[in-house]
Length: 515
Ligand code: BGC
Image 1 (cartoon, helix red, strand yellow):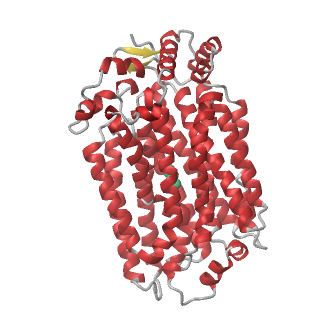
Image 2 (cartoon, helix red, strand yellow):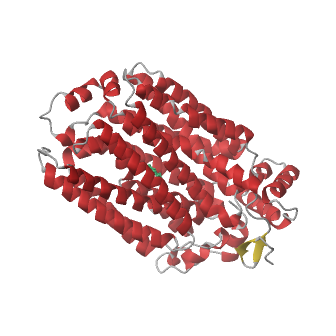
Image 3 (tube, helix red, strand yellow):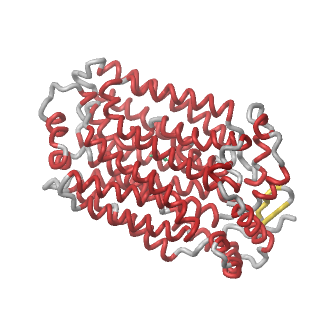
């Protein structure tokens, strides 16, 4: 029977309690864990376009960029060590997110967040004082370890704390703090690049200590999740905590479901092997394909290299950094559109609209760059209106990503996995995401050098594929309680053949109340 302010979870069930101030503040603090990821994404591109930074650590790139004016524009930044600087972090994050899943499970989410904050803090400190390329790369590997821990634990923490009805919005809250981190980093880059004496990049890199301190202190003051307390055997405390979080004393139904979920998942000895069963084929496919496609939109070409890209198409360094600030604002605002619309218009509508919009923009940008730069990368004189048109279409592209594949690339996997495979499948999603982020960061500048404007056509091709993928293979998950999610696969023309023989009642039993 639905209680007032209660949260319907389907099948006539309702958990009492709503969005209390306590849970709201807790979730806002925890979601700030996304800031370190975002800050780093935003900072690296800007720093690598600052001349004093290039001169100190990558002098050959600097020479190519500034002294040799006849050089092909497509290839001016092509340097393996420069890309290694950006991409080393993602490999480190991939490895640590695997370790973090064990820490998170055995010792609680808070400890993983604390590790994340501390590792990131040390990495930022080393980077701020870096004297050599190797110090830079060691610092970045530590930042990557930090991000791996944070990205593994923060979304899990949010999902466990959030009242059922608000899980989607709070998930996107994490993405929102990623985009805020990117924007803050872009703004800081813009100002720090102006510092006389050319040491502004040290402030940009060292400034990462601020979001690191936020997550570190946050992890110390945040309460533990009831789920984590149950998992570690403290049922009494867990129940008191659940009452506090929900703001009501009648939490018996949800509490019993949490116990049942915890017991069910502790009976699964081999979640990884479990994933290979035929009935989990749709889930495994999504765990791999969604993060893969998210990265193959090409978004991180813009996020990491916007200033580099903009200065390649003829902007002065200062304008190039300013353009990154503009795309950063668009990214934050468009993410809010997604928070507003995701439960109204549904996931599929956002995915399909976003895909079409990205495709158009990529085609325009490819044509514009191709027309001016041709094959040899020599643009001659570029009129101002031309650069404005390119930036405009890049902004429309970023907006499309920010209300579709950006947030949904994290939200949809987290809501479609049944409890018994949830943590293993989520680890796959995180690892695949980090791997392709790494790959694109590492090969982008080389690809730009060789594929030229065709690079935008390359990403456009994948946008077409992913849009068809969503159209034919991704069922709508809006408004469906997690434990009822099995029905979307059984009703699906393609996936039903994999899941139709499964024991539905048993699955519902195992999935209920879990995160
Ligand atoms: C992606 C990042 C990307 C960011 C941009 C995130 O969802 O995982 O790779 O840089 O969105 O806002």
